[in-house]
Figure 1 (cartoon, rainbow, N blue to C red):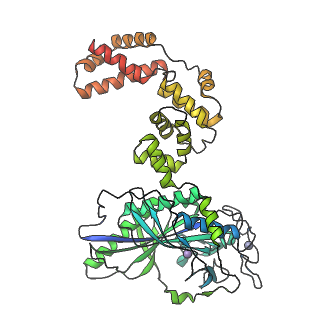
Figure 2: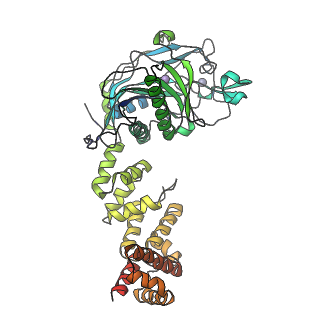
Figure 3: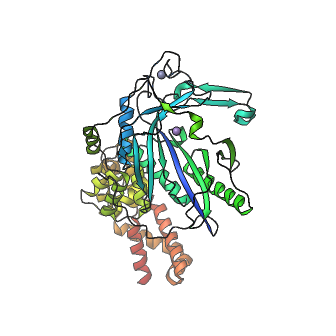
Length: 492
Ligand code: ZN
Ligand code: MN
């Protein structure tokens, strides 16, 4: 089978248990993502976040009698692309009705998949090589959104509730992991990796803050190494990667406290309360029987041909793990730096600039430090390469290069032109030397600490003199040249 992941590195660091001595964490993750389609799953209404409430609706997504669903082909294609990106087998699949009543679900059932999901048996390889199995990734529709007014925003004590059906029928894929995760760090890394895969494949914009990616965590604990699966609780309402970590930590400790006091958690859905920093009991968890699943009679099964799958595989863009490997090979940068650039999508820009023969370290430094902006689309690889070339030749100081890169991001164009416009010219060494002499004369105490002090003093005073020089030259001096001159004068 085609594997789009980079070869899994073996994790050489043993995994730290996240819990008190003797306990082991067991986490499975269920992630709902909204697919980036123009229209909803079964009707032609716009799939759009942030519209006026109840404006993207029609008889079908309002569940009015007599309306019929028509499957959105693009949604099915995106679901299959994701399946292949996760290394899943894409099967013949069947839509099913999951019956339950909720005010934001106008049909009183959710059209989803049950025993014959589209994607099964995949995996996500985390940055450190740890592998998390994917049980399934199935297609389903989203519900509408209720807002409870008064009583602290909770349904039980609300004065009244408002329902917005714009989200009803938006196409989702639910990705269900195996309970492989053992640490909070891996839970967070899993969500981040999945998010990058979703963005790289164009399947979803995966914005947790807008709800287009929503994470539920199934948490249980067990005596370390026992291999058993104890009662789990499903935590919902987690809307950031940071909250995910906090929620798992709280819930695991709650379970340990129960077990050690001779009690036991019971299986239920719990909600993460961000302000209170705790989970709260929700409804007790339904079994599959309660949902009375049955095959959806209004939709035909989805049967991808071998050609369809082959075409999806052929068009698969490089995934984040492969891109990280490529950037590491080209730059030798550390994993955090590489991860950051790939997450920002700046790895292609870096590789193209490096291909023009400039210093990879400088390319990486400029991007990581000075291009943390939302819109960097105007920065071309040739312009970035030209900028780095000017910096390497000493025509621009680091401070100046940073400013010129800012100009490139804002206006595009050519770095030499921006440098000229800002009046950046390399300071000549004589000029710099004169300035250093003047500063030494003005600050004799600092200078003697630089020449005669201990290492700490020397470092501090190097910073002091460099700062003074940068101030006097408005950042035009080249830091490296300054260090050289200071060093030379101290030893001579
Ligand atoms: Zn509709
Ligand atoms: Mn679901």
